[in-house]
Amino acid sequence: MKTISVVLAEDHHVVRQGLRALLAAEADLEVVGEAASGLDVGDLVERVKPDVLVVDFVMPGLNAPDIIRRMARVSPRTRALVLSMHANPAYVVEAIQSGAAGYVLKGSSAAELVRAIRAVAEGSRHLSPPLSEEMVEAYAQRAVPTGLDLYRTLTQREREVLHLAAEGQTSAQIGARLNISPRTVEVHRANLLRKLRLRGQSDLVRYAVGRGILTVDG
Amino acid sequence: MVPIWIGGHIEGLLYVSNRADRAFTDRDEGILIRLADHAAIAIQNATLYSRLQGLSGRLMEVQEAERRHLARELHDEIGQLLTGLRLTLDVPEPPSPALAERLGQAQALVQELLERIRALSLDLRPSILDDLGVLPALLDNMERYMSQTKIRVHLEHSGLDRRFAPETETGVYRIVQEALTNVARHGHVDEVTVRLWATDDVLGVQVEDHGAGFDPDAVLGTGRTGGLAGLRERAALLNGHLTVETHPGRGVRLTAEIPLNGSLRRAGD
Image 1 (cartoon, rainbow over the protein chains, first blue to last red):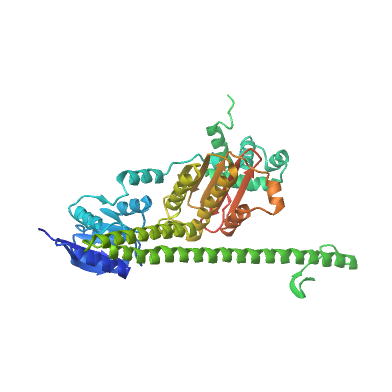
Image 2 (cartoon, helix red, strand yellow; image 1 turned 120 degrees about the vertical axis):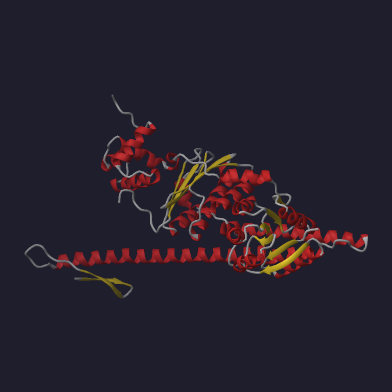
């Protein structure tokens, strides 16, 4: 039977001790190194080049995703298994995007952890239950920018000022129409230009035409 | 030259020169002294206001730091100890069935403790906000919000897949959280829209519902503004601004912009 070499990166002494005892009971697993700080992991992994790195998501100095990205350069064959308190798919996505091969919850049983280590060592991806690929995919979808209609971000006043300014009215005229001071009109105008990412009056008119706020005769 | 007196000290001097070819009269001087008194009051108010804002900002910082500390302590320290305990209780082959049962019960208790600690820590301050940023933190918050309130959150966002200054992330997270809580409490709706957008200069947020709304003058008049004043203050402390648009029966639209580089630049400047 081929032995799987493992490095444990976990800042909590109690947890590390528990993990070490647990893995020692498995004949095919061998702990070849331990680190308690995110900054030490890179050097250790580069030196011992283990088959699997078991790494706590939150580590002092450097979190797991940064450690894993760095590891890809110094020991590309090492597979990373993230150990985490967080069942939240956002953490899982972050870990996987950084290159992690597996994600195990700290509440998991010993058997589950051992199963995960063997799975990632063999080259497959492993998410510990109740995490699932579907859940990770669903989160990743929600995090993709939806885009938004910047016009909707305008307040009612800003919309009114936009419409009147597009018609070519001056701040004084708009102010008189809306019953506010010309200075206030200027503030609304500046705000709406910033929100719509426009530079000035000609941009504003072009935008208004494009949106159908202003119709061009002829 | 007229002194500006504030609380027995000369705070400044008002210099006046005469363009006309005549000396100042006693009457002119009287007017100037009164002008200086008005200036003194305005200066004093402005000073007090900025000091108050400074204090209030400091208070929010301290509160946020304290929450972060407690949340971390609970989640990381106590949580890790419980995890260690769980691993210790995970005995592969218990010598007797009775012991196996007791161990199982102990493990279940530890699991429940872990879950409670996690919930408490999330309420105080979600570590996801510090670990992953404002968008993941809000996505998570909205997920819980939807399952707790049955109100559907429709989210539109662009430019949020990056990190911002910690105080900006905290501010925006709290603004959305508070606004959604208000919607659940007073809105009487089953749907709310949240918009988040970021450019190089500005992080914007809008929370809009088509629910009950309220009379803004009446609410602000009573001084019982609840979360609303707090929201406005949060935005102001980050040099941003927050607008609340509402009428009874016409829903609420809350829009805030937070500058990312000091202050909100005026377009065209």
